[in-house]
Length: 432
Image 1: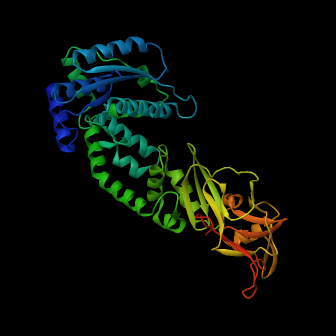
Image 2 (image 1 turned 180 degrees about the vertical axis):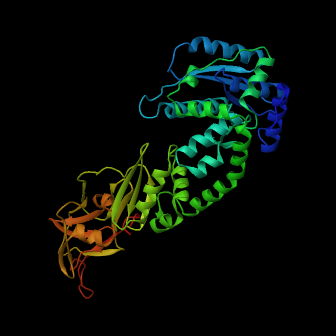
């Protein structure tokens, strides 16, 4: 990667846009601009191309003083370049990884601004130097595939909005030279000087080595195809809420890691992937792995799901049944009582019935005698978190029918009996 003259940065950004095919002339771009050298160079380059309405967005994270002066300087930069300007203050959760929380708040603000402005594109100033630092940073955390693929040039940010990084082929010093050539002094963020931050230590180490950007960025470009292959294998495993546990275990930790990325676990590393693969390979009926960030991986017999925790115990629910009709016990299923389905002898079990959810201590008459309903549901491999959501019909404490199981033994009328009956249609969400 040879040194670019200041105006060469503009040409390279134009070439980047031509390579991606977006945005087209006339399409608006929201540019995240902190006033630092990278984002200011991006704003200069895009404005110099002259093809796009630009909206410069300064985001105040509320983490340090002096942001009023910084916002005023960015507003001056934007006005000089013919770009609109807006300042937004965000709230950053001060727990866990502060930098990750700030990044999440920042991207959300950028997406919301683009939506308000009717813009399909958001551009940020990540450079080739950021790319090199990111490869080393992620590799140190054990996420090899994600590390070597580096930062993507373009990715979805929100529905209908793409995130662009047009400076990924430009070094940080080259971007700084463009800003200096325009006679502007970029804003310095003192956070970048903190020696206790891993990324700062990586930045200093790479600066001592010299020339690392070209090799690491080349590695990232070459590895991107491998990551796309892993993502395709992960996608082939199916929806995240209906994965085959054995298939996930057989796919290996690299694919497991891509599943976690797909689920939105931005900080997933090798330890997360190994834990997920071990959960998938287990033999226990129902087990849950807390992934953090409000996500869990849950194995339910042969099935595996990744997502938010299962709904809480709904408590004791009950609806009286006085005759045929449709009855709603839970939001995700209703019971229909009419003439078709599992028959119940009305001569022996007259109205009213009790439509309720399964409870500890329930028993069901089977051909083998009375059994605990919990044991019946366990044999049917109904996951433990779902058992309290199974609907049943009872008459004076006697369980007549269980959703997904059918009628209890000796509840249905005999074929030759001329007795009235009612039939129960199993809810759409059958127990498997």
